[in-house]
Length: 278
Image (cartoon, one colour):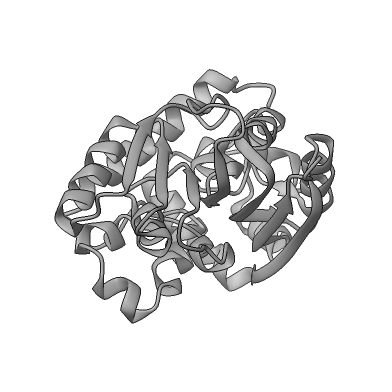
Protein backbone atom coordinates (compact mmCIF):
# COMPACT_ATOMS: atom_id res chain seq x y z
CA UNK A 1 0.00 0.00 0.00
CA UNK A 2 1.25 3.47 -0.77
CA UNK A 3 -0.46 5.59 1.87
CA UNK A 4 -0.62 3.08 4.70
CA UNK A 5 2.46 1.28 5.96
CA UNK A 6 2.81 -2.19 7.40
CA UNK A 7 2.99 -0.92 10.98
CA UNK A 8 -0.21 1.08 10.53
CA UNK A 9 -2.04 -1.94 9.15
CA UNK A 10 -0.78 -4.20 11.95
CA UNK A 11 -1.84 -1.66 14.59
CA UNK A 12 -5.29 -1.35 13.05
CA UNK A 13 -5.70 -5.14 12.91
CA UNK A 14 -4.59 -5.52 16.54
CA UNK A 15 -6.98 -2.81 17.74
CA UNK A 16 -9.84 -4.22 15.70
CA UNK A 17 -9.53 -7.70 17.17
CA UNK A 18 -8.78 -6.43 20.65
CA UNK A 19 -12.13 -4.68 20.49
CA UNK A 20 -13.72 -7.90 19.29
CA UNK A 21 -12.31 -9.73 22.31
CA UNK A 22 -13.58 -7.06 24.67
CA UNK A 23 -17.01 -7.23 23.06
CA UNK A 24 -17.43 -10.95 23.77
CA UNK A 25 -19.76 -11.33 26.72
CA UNK A 26 -21.44 -8.00 26.08
CA UNK A 27 -22.62 -8.71 22.54
CA UNK A 28 -23.69 -11.72 20.52
CA UNK A 29 -21.56 -10.67 17.62
CA UNK A 30 -17.97 -9.98 16.70
CA UNK A 31 -16.82 -7.01 14.65
CA UNK A 32 -19.09 -5.96 11.82
CA UNK A 33 -17.84 -5.20 8.36
CA UNK A 34 -15.93 -8.47 8.03
CA UNK A 35 -16.37 -11.29 5.57
CA UNK A 36 -16.04 -13.64 8.52
CA UNK A 37 -19.04 -12.00 10.14
CA UNK A 38 -21.17 -13.34 7.31
CA UNK A 39 -20.35 -17.03 7.62
CA UNK A 40 -17.88 -17.81 10.41
CA UNK A 41 -19.87 -19.32 13.25
CA UNK A 42 -22.26 -21.27 11.02
CA UNK A 43 -19.50 -23.68 9.95
CA UNK A 44 -19.21 -25.57 13.24
CA UNK A 45 -21.46 -28.55 13.93
CA UNK A 46 -23.62 -28.81 17.00
CA UNK A 47 -21.30 -31.38 18.59
CA UNK A 48 -18.39 -28.94 18.34
CA UNK A 49 -20.48 -26.06 19.64
CA UNK A 50 -21.70 -28.08 22.60
CA UNK A 51 -18.12 -28.98 23.56
CA UNK A 52 -16.98 -25.35 23.79
CA UNK A 53 -17.64 -22.36 26.04
CA UNK A 54 -20.12 -19.88 24.60
CA UNK A 55 -17.40 -17.22 24.53
CA UNK A 56 -15.21 -19.35 22.25
CA UNK A 57 -17.97 -19.64 19.67
CA UNK A 58 -18.94 -15.97 20.05
CA UNK A 59 -15.36 -14.95 19.31
CA UNK A 60 -15.15 -17.10 16.19
CA UNK A 61 -14.39 -14.68 13.36
CA UNK A 62 -13.14 -17.18 10.81
CA UNK A 63 -14.29 -18.00 7.30
CA UNK A 64 -14.08 -21.79 7.53
CA UNK A 65 -13.53 -24.77 9.81
CA UNK A 66 -9.88 -25.79 9.36
CA UNK A 67 -10.09 -28.44 12.07
CA UNK A 68 -12.16 -30.53 9.65
CA UNK A 69 -10.03 -29.64 6.65
CA UNK A 70 -6.88 -30.76 8.43
CA UNK A 71 -8.10 -34.30 9.22
CA UNK A 72 -6.28 -34.34 12.55
CA UNK A 73 -5.14 -37.55 14.23
CA UNK A 74 -4.30 -38.46 17.84
CA UNK A 75 -0.69 -37.74 18.73
CA UNK A 76 -0.15 -34.89 16.24
CA UNK A 77 1.17 -31.43 17.10
CA UNK A 78 -0.97 -28.64 15.66
CA UNK A 79 -0.30 -24.89 15.34
CA UNK A 80 -3.08 -22.37 14.71
CA UNK A 81 -1.81 -19.12 13.15
CA UNK A 82 -3.86 -16.24 14.52
CA UNK A 83 -5.81 -18.28 17.05
CA UNK A 84 -8.11 -15.52 18.33
CA UNK A 85 -10.52 -16.70 21.00
CA UNK A 86 -9.19 -20.23 20.71
CA UNK A 87 -12.06 -22.16 19.11
CA UNK A 88 -9.90 -24.02 16.56
CA UNK A 89 -7.12 -24.69 19.07
CA UNK A 90 -9.53 -26.22 21.58
CA UNK A 91 -11.21 -28.37 18.92
CA UNK A 92 -7.81 -29.44 17.58
CA UNK A 93 -6.58 -30.33 21.07
CA UNK A 94 -9.53 -32.67 21.53
CA UNK A 95 -8.88 -34.33 18.17
CA UNK A 96 -5.16 -34.97 18.81
CA UNK A 97 -5.61 -36.07 22.45
CA UNK A 98 -4.42 -37.75 24.53
CA UNK A 99 -0.80 -37.60 23.38
CA UNK A 100 -0.94 -34.71 20.88
CA UNK A 101 -0.82 -30.97 21.51
CA UNK A 102 -2.32 -27.83 19.98
CA UNK A 103 -0.62 -24.42 19.98
CA UNK A 104 -2.39 -21.15 19.33
CA UNK A 105 -0.40 -18.09 18.20
CA UNK A 106 -1.84 -14.57 18.36
CA UNK A 107 -0.43 -11.04 18.61
CA UNK A 108 -3.38 -9.53 20.48
CA UNK A 109 -3.17 -9.72 24.30
CA UNK A 110 -6.93 -9.39 24.69
CA UNK A 111 -7.55 -12.36 22.42
CA UNK A 112 -4.93 -14.42 24.23
CA UNK A 113 -6.57 -13.68 27.57
CA UNK A 114 -9.94 -14.69 26.16
CA UNK A 115 -8.50 -17.90 24.67
CA UNK A 116 -6.86 -18.90 27.94
CA UNK A 117 -10.09 -18.25 29.80
CA UNK A 118 -11.95 -20.42 27.30
CA UNK A 119 -9.33 -23.14 27.67
CA UNK A 120 -9.74 -23.17 31.44
CA UNK A 121 -13.52 -23.32 31.18
CA UNK A 122 -13.36 -26.13 28.63
CA UNK A 123 -10.91 -28.11 30.78
CA UNK A 124 -8.50 -28.65 27.87
CA UNK A 125 -4.99 -29.41 29.15
CA UNK A 126 -3.10 -30.25 25.95
CA UNK A 127 -3.21 -26.73 24.48
CA UNK A 128 -0.94 -23.72 24.83
CA UNK A 129 -1.42 -20.14 23.65
CA UNK A 130 1.63 -18.13 22.57
CA UNK A 131 2.00 -14.41 21.96
CA UNK A 132 3.72 -13.43 18.75
CA UNK A 133 3.19 -12.75 15.07
CA UNK A 134 2.58 -15.20 12.27
CA UNK A 135 5.58 -13.71 10.44
CA UNK A 136 7.92 -14.83 13.28
CA UNK A 137 6.63 -18.01 14.90
CA UNK A 138 8.13 -18.66 18.37
CA UNK A 139 8.59 -22.42 17.85
CA UNK A 140 11.62 -24.48 16.79
CA UNK A 141 12.28 -25.82 13.30
CA UNK A 142 10.41 -28.98 12.31
CA UNK A 143 8.33 -29.09 15.50
CA UNK A 144 4.78 -29.19 14.13
CA UNK A 145 2.81 -31.81 12.19
CA UNK A 146 -0.06 -29.60 11.02
CA UNK A 147 -0.59 -25.86 10.61
CA UNK A 148 -4.11 -24.49 10.54
CA UNK A 149 -5.41 -20.93 10.31
CA UNK A 150 -8.82 -19.35 9.96
CA UNK A 151 -9.18 -16.14 7.94
CA UNK A 152 -5.91 -14.64 9.24
CA UNK A 153 -3.21 -14.91 6.57
CA UNK A 154 -4.99 -12.26 4.48
CA UNK A 155 -4.40 -9.78 7.34
CA UNK A 156 -0.61 -10.04 7.07
CA UNK A 157 1.31 -7.43 5.10
CA UNK A 158 4.21 -9.87 4.64
CA UNK A 159 2.71 -13.11 3.39
CA UNK A 160 5.99 -14.55 2.03
CA UNK A 161 7.34 -14.38 5.60
CA UNK A 162 4.22 -16.18 6.88
CA UNK A 163 4.68 -19.00 4.38
CA UNK A 164 8.43 -19.27 5.06
CA UNK A 165 7.78 -19.55 8.79
CA UNK A 166 5.04 -22.11 8.27
CA UNK A 167 7.42 -24.17 6.14
CA UNK A 168 10.20 -23.83 8.73
CA UNK A 169 8.24 -25.07 11.74
CA UNK A 170 6.55 -27.95 9.90
CA UNK A 171 8.14 -31.37 10.08
CA UNK A 172 9.07 -33.02 6.77
CA UNK A 173 5.83 -34.37 5.36
CA UNK A 174 3.84 -31.95 7.52
CA UNK A 175 0.77 -30.30 6.10
CA UNK A 176 -0.78 -26.87 5.85
CA UNK A 177 -4.58 -26.75 6.03
CA UNK A 178 -6.02 -23.26 6.30
CA UNK A 179 -9.21 -21.35 5.60
CA UNK A 180 -8.75 -17.88 4.16
CA UNK A 181 -10.25 -15.13 2.07
CA UNK A 182 -8.94 -15.37 -1.50
CA UNK A 183 -9.55 -13.28 -4.61
CA UNK A 184 -10.79 -14.58 -7.93
CA UNK A 185 -9.74 -11.37 -9.68
CA UNK A 186 -7.82 -8.24 -8.75
CA UNK A 187 -9.49 -5.60 -6.60
CA UNK A 188 -9.95 -2.02 -7.75
CA UNK A 189 -7.01 0.10 -6.56
CA UNK A 190 -8.99 2.37 -4.13
CA UNK A 191 -10.03 -0.65 -2.06
CA UNK A 192 -6.42 -1.22 -0.95
CA UNK A 193 -6.38 2.16 0.80
CA UNK A 194 -9.47 1.67 2.97
CA UNK A 195 -8.22 0.46 6.35
CA UNK A 196 -11.61 -1.01 7.23
CA UNK A 197 -11.31 -3.33 4.23
CA UNK A 198 -7.97 -4.57 5.58
CA UNK A 199 -9.38 -5.38 8.99
CA UNK A 200 -12.47 -6.68 7.18
CA UNK A 201 -10.35 -9.38 5.48
CA UNK A 202 -10.73 -8.11 1.91
CA UNK A 203 -8.03 -5.57 0.98
CA UNK A 204 -5.12 -7.83 1.95
CA UNK A 205 -6.38 -11.01 0.29
CA UNK A 206 -4.27 -12.72 -2.36
CA UNK A 207 -5.35 -13.79 -5.82
CA UNK A 208 -5.81 -17.56 -5.96
CA UNK A 209 -2.95 -17.84 -8.47
CA UNK A 210 -0.65 -15.74 -6.25
CA UNK A 211 -1.55 -17.89 -3.24
CA UNK A 212 -0.37 -21.01 -5.05
CA UNK A 213 2.79 -19.37 -6.37
CA UNK A 214 3.86 -17.96 -3.01
CA UNK A 215 3.34 -21.24 -1.21
CA UNK A 216 5.39 -23.03 -3.87
CA UNK A 217 8.11 -20.36 -3.62
CA UNK A 218 8.30 -21.09 0.12
CA UNK A 219 8.92 -24.77 -0.70
CA UNK A 220 5.44 -26.28 -0.39
CA UNK A 221 4.15 -28.98 -2.72
CA UNK A 222 0.69 -30.37 -3.53
CA UNK A 223 -0.85 -26.90 -3.24
CA UNK A 224 -4.63 -26.71 -3.66
CA UNK A 225 -6.99 -23.74 -3.36
CA UNK A 226 -10.58 -24.94 -3.12
CA UNK A 227 -13.41 -22.34 -3.14
CA UNK A 228 -16.00 -22.80 -0.39
CA UNK A 229 -18.14 -19.65 -0.71
CA UNK A 230 -18.13 -16.93 -3.36
CA UNK A 231 -19.40 -13.59 -2.08
CA UNK A 232 -22.05 -12.20 -4.40
CA UNK A 233 -23.17 -8.58 -4.65
CA UNK A 234 -25.73 -9.05 -1.86
CA UNK A 235 -23.00 -10.37 0.47
CA UNK A 236 -20.70 -7.48 -0.37
CA UNK A 237 -23.51 -4.96 0.06
CA UNK A 238 -24.24 -6.24 3.59
CA UNK A 239 -20.57 -5.95 4.44
CA UNK A 240 -20.45 -2.42 3.02
CA UNK A 241 -23.44 -1.39 5.15
CA UNK A 242 -21.71 -2.71 8.27
CA UNK A 243 -18.45 -1.08 7.30
CA UNK A 244 -19.95 2.35 6.68
CA UNK A 245 -21.57 2.23 10.12
CA UNK A 246 -18.33 1.43 11.95
CA UNK A 247 -15.45 3.13 10.07
CA UNK A 248 -14.85 6.24 8.02
CA UNK A 249 -15.18 5.54 4.31
CA UNK A 250 -13.31 8.02 2.07
CA UNK A 251 -15.60 10.40 0.22
CA UNK A 252 -13.71 9.63 -2.97
CA UNK A 253 -14.78 5.98 -2.84
CA UNK A 254 -17.87 5.25 -4.91
CA UNK A 255 -19.40 2.64 -2.62
CA UNK A 256 -22.15 1.51 -5.01
CA UNK A 257 -19.74 1.05 -7.90
CA UNK A 258 -17.22 -0.70 -5.67
CA UNK A 259 -19.84 -3.13 -4.36
CA UNK A 260 -20.83 -3.99 -7.91
CA UNK A 261 -17.19 -4.52 -8.89
CA UNK A 262 -16.44 -6.72 -5.86
CA UNK A 263 -19.40 -9.04 -6.41
CA UNK A 264 -18.00 -12.46 -7.31
CA UNK A 265 -14.39 -11.31 -6.83
CA UNK A 266 -14.00 -12.45 -3.22
CA UNK A 267 -14.31 -15.99 -1.88
CA UNK A 268 -13.55 -18.05 1.16
CA UNK A 269 -11.38 -21.04 0.35
CA UNK A 270 -9.66 -24.09 1.79
CA UNK A 271 -5.94 -23.96 1.11
CA UNK A 272 -3.97 -27.20 1.38
CA UNK A 273 -0.24 -27.82 0.95
CA UNK A 274 2.44 -30.20 2.17
CA UNK A 275 6.10 -29.85 3.13
CA UNK A 276 8.07 -32.41 1.11
CA UNK A 277 9.69 -35.23 3.06
CA UNK A 278 13.05 -34.19 1.61
